[in-house]
Image (cartoon, rainbow, N blue to C red; front, side):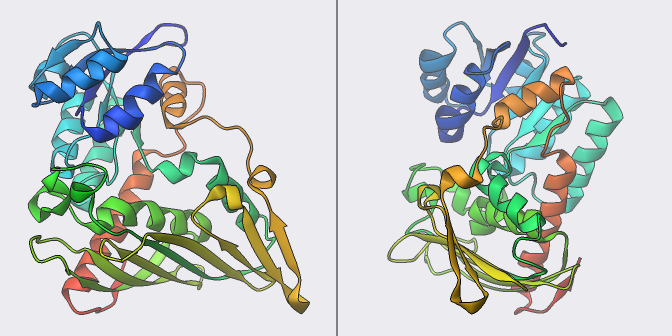
Length: 336
């Protein structure tokens, strides 16, 4: 399929697809959105009118998968649907780009990985920081030894509200446990994956979790302590209930400390010995790199393997499961 057009079906036409998937895929040479699926006709219409006027429309994902109109799908639906939709698409011989978190549990994600291997099809997970040039630059800096031996990483991401009252109004699955909602799968998956990327595999987890919004049954505040296999430690703080939004990353090494805020345009600051301060701009850290959708197309064509295969999504799901298990048991350590 090096030169043939890649025909993609979009399963789920909500805000993520409207804001990211449809726009991103339409911009990739040799990719055509040929089919749309959502149970809400109005959501399909938004994507159709803006991005794919000729695409076939379906209310049932199995009808799309069996239509003969596609080579690949994106899955951007509530989390509890990720596994069955992905398995069905792979079984039909289609490549899959699945939103994060990959599934409801590591049992599901292991099954998804096994299925992709069995049919030799691409399974890519949309862990978006992995495709971000700014975070790629930070990873390269950490892995280069610029900070010395890695000792500790702290990451904070706090919001004023959950997505159902923010950027995706009415999307109650974000705050419904049975549908895969909760802050860990929403934003913790991104930040936790970044921490694993920078410091390697997690050995153990201790988590304190809380639900402060009275009308939901999912965790909306989390504090996590990690021990990494390399001996380093990490702290992850998440919230949907803070008075203001805030994001930051601190990376402590034997030779320096890296500080980064919410805005890549502000660059980073490195604190060295003897009170040395080095500032690196966004341009110092970044190089042009393919986004998630270009990577997906390249992997399908055999140009390059996907940088975020199902195995990475599964590894992060194990961490997510451990956070929930520890939190439900009052912070008892969970060894991965």
